[in-house]
Image 1: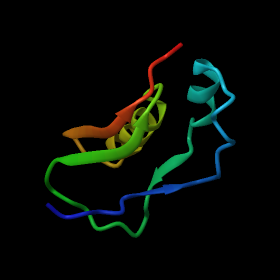
Image 2 (image 1 turned 90 degrees about the horizontal axis):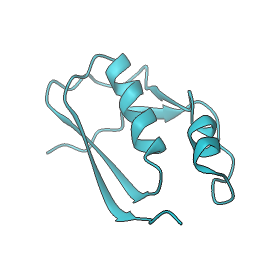
Image 3 (image 1 turned 135 degrees about the vertical axis):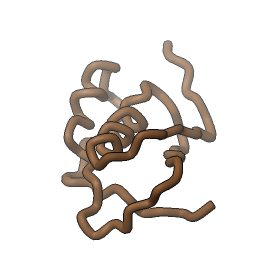
Image 4 (image 1 turned 30 degrees about the vertical axis):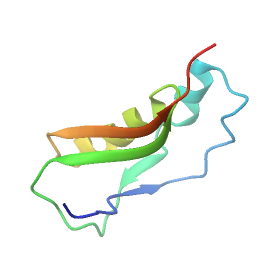
Length: 84
């Protein structure tokens, strides 16, 4: 399975540790974009993230990939942070 660098951050998001659930989702809106120089991949895509807290990062990455034309997008996270 190839490792592909398909996304780029359009701006640096603020530190998310102190943000509420809604603020995290808003902070990541339009942060990720499909790389204009990326080589199109015909297979399924797996987004790998280190920590799943709210799902905002995975959601916004998947949205950028869907807008680029990818249909089958999956996610894999190493750890999950329970909500208080």
